[in-house]
Length: 228
Image (cartoon, rainbow, N blue to C red):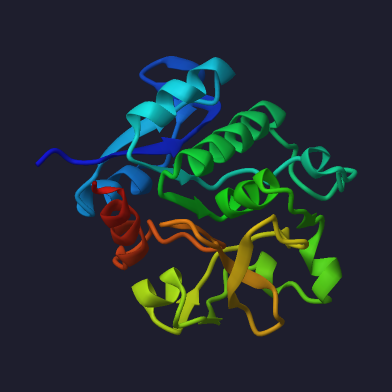
């Protein structure tokens, strides 16, 4: 049986090989390795031609919306906070459109960190522009491990259980949830750490990075959902 093709979103940045330094399409290898470990075949998707999205959707069996720079607040009608890293509007537009197309086509989707934010904005949701100010502490912006609570009846809970320790620094968080999204995991200050799209076979967003480390269960669940 052939492996399901799992698309992984990427970004442009300068890269060095030999004596050359050029703009390159980049993706941390952990995503592709996690997909391979789960039994899928990774396909890297550069944020280029919007007209190519339909072709990607027809050819893919599943999609990972990868992490990276925070989503441009202009994508959900807010002003940019100068404390947030410079956004990448082209990548935002491409990935928001890609996410909507994947959902409409019924493809399994896993949004990772920034990818959860993209998923939320794609469905009409908004983000907290600067999380430390909203919650009056810096714990989310640090790499300190913290335990989150997960709904055991959710797809995330069925994959990883009702509690998991995560350590993923982020400066923004979910504010108003997108249409059809349901919060299924929370930090101790009630900031949403995972969401699922109701009625979809597998459309999940998590604030942490399940592709890192030895716990591959969420990527396993994505690939399993992508098998016909």
